[in-house]
Structures are given as structure tokens and as C-alpha cells.
View: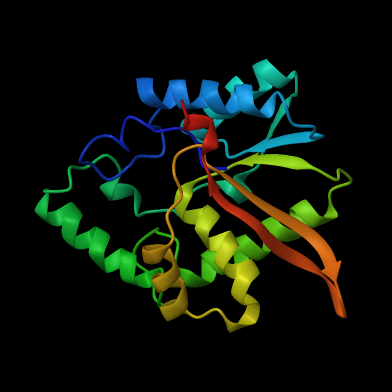
Length: 207
């Protein structure tokens, strides 16, 4: 799932690594925690970024699970020089757009920002990590862009290109604390692999 709304999600700034949950995000974390209290799962894994850790903490408190933290599930890494800068900061805005293109251009890199190759390698490592764990059911608290990258990799595999990833990222939406479900299983005349089951389930927001 994606973490709850962060302070920077709600502000016109380039989200920083250290931003915490907003008041809305804390409410969302409580709602998803209540929902997951009705679900049987064996492990709770989270990105170590504060907004994800706070979301995981709410889930841990309600479900009595102990959260584990993994850097595999952090958000795409922007150049640190733009963190927290307003969208209308000319230098930060120009740098962000230059970096953003490297997310879809193999081999391109801007400063210390992650690029397409980094993201695909990390997505593969994250999926392998989950597949190789002993538990059969896990809850993972991660981030919107990286979550969509995982889904794109599952759906398209080695057919995924920078162009297709960009299209998927701009056409698929993931609400804060919405649930995405993936199974590692076989199918009729098909070997076992990751399969998308549910995307962006946010029924816990219903009245």
C-alpha cells in the first residue's frame, strides 16, 4: 500500500525524504489499520521514510504486528538539492524536470537522483525479496511512484521500457493508503510468477 498523506503531499513543494504524515494522513493510517485488523497476514514491512513508518506504526498498533523496515521500498530518489523546495522555485523546477526524464531514459542520470536503471533493478530486488521470504502473506507500506513501478514490472516484465513506464505512471493512480494486492502463483499452463490481483482499493474511505 501507499503511505498516508504527508505534509509535503498537501503542499506545493517537491516532497522531502523526512516529511511526516499530515493530519489527514494520520486519519488515513488509522482507517487502514482498522481495516487490516480484519485481515490475516504474517509480516509487516515498511519503507523507513517517516511517512511510511508512521503509517506502519498505526497498523502495527492495531494488528499487534512488529514492523520491519527495508530500503528496497523507499520512494524514487530525487536529487537531494530539490527536496522541500517550492514547485515555483525556478532552479528546483528546472532540475526536477531534467531528473524526471532520467526516470524513463536508460543510462541517463542527474546528480544523485535515481534513474530508470536504478528503479528497475530495485523493483526486481524488492519482488525477489518478497518472494524469498518464508511468510505466505505480507503487508508492505511503500510509496506511490515506486508502487506503480512494481506493478508495471509485474505486468510487463522484460517488455517494460522507459516509454511504457512513463505512460503507466501517468495513467495509473494510487490513493494514499489504498491497497494493491499481488500474488505469486501459477495459472493454467503457466508457471508461477507475480500476478496483479487488485489495484488502488480504498474502500476503507467509504462512509
